[in-house]
Length: 110
Image 1 (cartoon, rainbow, N blue to C red):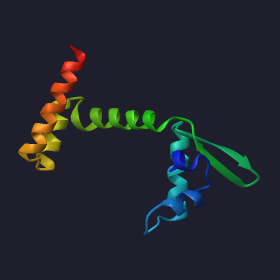
Image 2: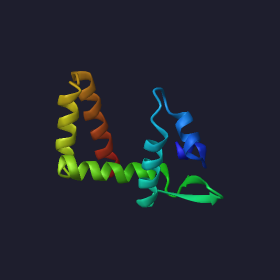
Image 3: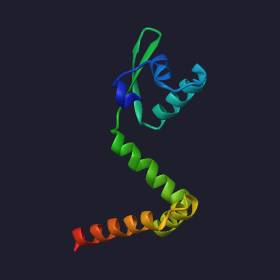
């Protein structure tokens, strides 16, 4: 939401969230955790803090994906694809689309 807002106080973030909205303290805690990890920062204006992202959305997605791959799939893309295919009960058409996507990627790298 900070990428969308560019800068925001906690109340601005909460306003963008779907109902039922989380408690102010919950969002504030998540914001502080993200700041502690270096993903966001803030400017202080008196008692107010205006937060902003310091990494791009693409960088954050890469970080979270890499962490998920390591933590849940032991860095095995085969395990990831197998999990998705089984969990989402992909049909033959969707599996064929995945195969075509992989073939396309292979051809680009050849």
